[in-house]
Length: 186
Ligand code: PAN
Ligand code: ZN
Image (cartoon, rainbow, N blue to C red; front, side, top):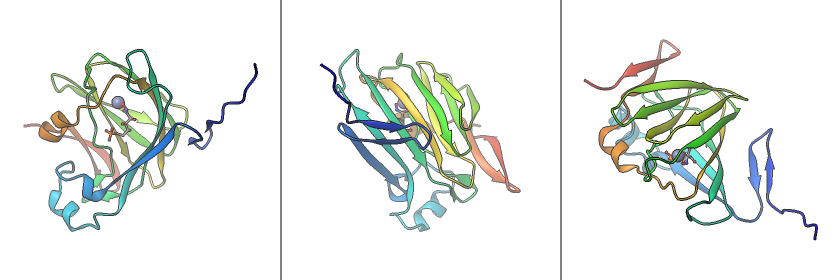
């Protein structure tokens, strides 16, 4: 039997639609304690969009399954710090993930469990393998939407608490109009 899937992924724009697709939005009001300048964040409109994730769930959170998603980080800053995702380790620490750049310019911050950090440039066509035991966060350093595809094991889970508590060891700040990686520890 030949059937058409009614789920669509328009790869050039990163547009995901159809059955099994859902979207979630993170606004300034959801991101307390994430940015360096918490005072600047608290003065902003809490409804302002920072990023959204559209994902396709074909199998639920079962072991052996996969999720597929697109993250869209808006251009903007809180104080000198570029808009970014909350960032997380996977709850099952050994679960890896692929990201790939679709549109816009940004950085992928990566941090291992000993807080060793590095950043990879994200641009249309860039491919990023995020190994297990590695926290990951997207930062939009450009003036347009940063759009990034992702595929990850559906039983990976998201551990936001350790990032909420300890942050990343690197921040990305606008210094004289240029993105700069600034150590956050010590
Ligand atoms: C991505 C992220 C997405 C949003 O789908 O969940 O970029 O970032 P936060 O989850 O940190 O808010 C992913 O890495 N999934 O595992
Ligand atoms: Zn992840």
